[in-house]
Image 1 (cartoon, rainbow, N blue to C red):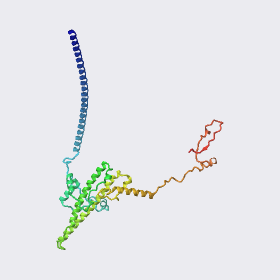
Image 2 (cartoon, rainbow, N blue to C red):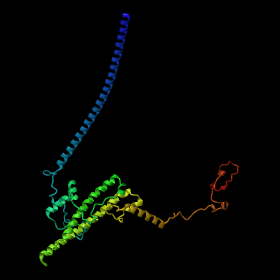
Image 3 (cartoon, rainbow, N blue to C red):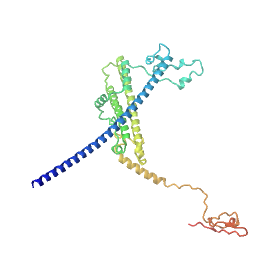
Length: 367
């Protein structure tokens, strides 16, 4: 029994050793495959990096060639320029390059009969008396550079419209129309609304200044004195300027609203395109307070117009060949025949010598 047990144990040990050898060989195989795949991936990455490096070097070479060409061009230009001259020239201080136009009388002979021709067709800019230098400099800077966003918001928020001036508000787009607008049209309309806000807020300030000037009391001055005349006259002139400025601002606001309508017009149906007509008034809303009611009125007016106009018949011409008219009455052979077509082939040209041609028969077209 002991010998049998020993042999059995030996067999088990041998089987375990064989199993271990198989497992180790499998592990070696898998590691070898993984190593091969890793090496393949690494080789692909290296190839890609090498190609990228080659492209970069070629681009660097091209840039070097371009820079050398630019330097050659600069050298040739510098050689052609006269010595002592420079490109950093102050054009602002040159009288020949200033904003003021040269008088046209210096360019032509005043004794010539055509001397007034330049004045008629190339007139100079009409200017008034100059302002204070500091004020003029500030105006030029603001009209060229504008305000920063934070300064603009702070300034516009601090200006409140008068209670009885409903028109001094930024006109908004109606919600019903706003839903139809594309993102691009909405962006354009928002930009124009911002411009309209600047216009309205500036008009509020001018209106307040005009109101304060009109409320000034000059009764304390002696009648007929020079001081009373000067102050009253200056106040009236300033008031007139404010009136003219408000008139121009109001016209600009109306024109801007019409531009906004034309920008939105492509998304509106042709049936309701009359909403963009200047005859349709705008309020705080771009297309009026009740755009649905206006649309219903347009539908009703269109129906009435169609009923009044009626249907128009299309002119098709005077000549018509009726079914009962004679077809080709020039010969008696076809007299009385109605409009139709020759249904059978005329075989006279297809017969052999000596045979008689077959007569064709005129028949009506089948309906």
